[in-house]
Length: 363
Image 1: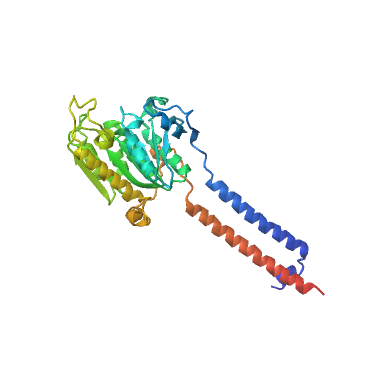
Image 2: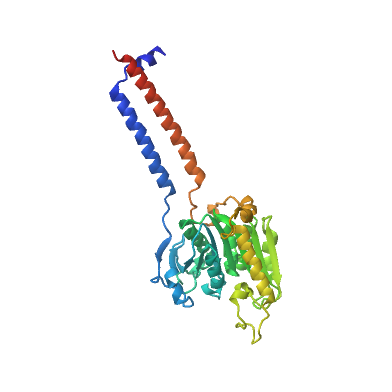
């Protein structure tokens, strides 16, 4: 202790100045590291009317176009609608186009949500994917979710029709901001019976605990999807899940009354009764409001408290081929703040002791 006292007594103004410089350096270094830790490279390549979009998109919405890149380098084009901290990804069915979700997307955007809907990698104006990459629609969903995250969205419902629902389910456990999942008329895997576990929506559903919505038609003209959707429903680990079956002659988004007006290519000239479709649309809309919270409500916590309780921790497994990196989590920044704060207090305390000892040395 005597030795320590002697050393302290020898400290003068020059050493105190050095300590102050070190203190400021630690503070500035902490700020730099924190900023660096939260920096994400943007997936967005271009926005606005110059982006190539599907021919079905109306002229009035072309300024809402967005082009972004998936983790395996595929460029996708779509629409980014609305504002807010809560969002929805909408994946379309194979053989359908991005506009199949457009009525619902515009309604969500008008209601205060951010919405992204895009053409999958094998659809125009994309069409870049080849070989095995054609079946990685899940990476499209992950990229779309990250675009929403870049724009400040903190809660996401991943929704899709047919293969769009399957890919949404496969991607869902890897979306850190996942708040809910909604699928319509979706098969259980991306590649049929030969699909590996990482492309199985059934396997993914075992890790999905957020509120989930499943819908199917018993009279689906494209095939028997009842057993497929039922398998996904049963596999889901969610304690808040809903299964809706209707008898209308429709598939995917065509089950929703807002996206099917009268005849379709498979209705064989018959006008379809939309009663059940209207009911399904209302149920899906209620699911969005219940899961994300209604932005129009003064106290939206009442509408979203249940979904907050069941929001899952993201699952990251490189062996499953999910290439997108997660967004830096808030707890990592908080941990660094604690460490930086402790170091700063320690340096200030030591500096104070030095000042006191130096004053005692003065004649």
